[in-house]
Length: 261
Image 1 (cartoon, helix red, strand yellow):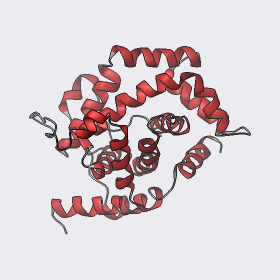
Image 2: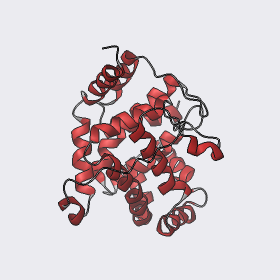
Image 3: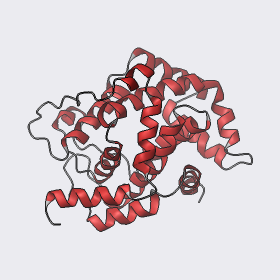
């Protein structure tokens, strides 16, 4: 099991072993599709253009590149307006504002109902933001939900190198920051989506995967500009076995505890 194929298999088996997370993600992506798209069945795989100098899993590299394109660098007018509406409602930044609301309400009586009630007025912008993200997941991993686990693991370890991000000085697809609190920002959006029934099944399955990636990156501490060596397979398996079996509420409590120490 020292071959590259064996390493991939061992990591994937470890990630898939915890409570069938991949199956839950499969149900979530299927439920989130429109009837027309769901009926399309077996579709051709995504186009993967040749990128000289790219390192790491090709599909995962493309997924993260296109995810950032769709959700950040080249937002649709509808998505831009959704974030603007969130910012107006929050009175500041649409990303950190949601995280701040999550941390604040998480320390008060009545949580998580208070958190859901606070964000209820912006349920529709949340739905637009969710759709933009889920559609990219579905495009690249709709028929391989176990691949989402791999993509998040590679992302957290910093083993995906994409020269197309050189202009942004962020060639490695990974989360910025030490600690990488953007995982918590993403969780705040994911948990709000679950509470407000916005692509609920998909995000309920993603919450443990996001928590796993957060914990794995704390171990890996990847560089954002040079490709990083993968973590030992037993380390990935240990973190996966610890985080993936946890339900959304347990993950939520564990991430909130980081802010309420």
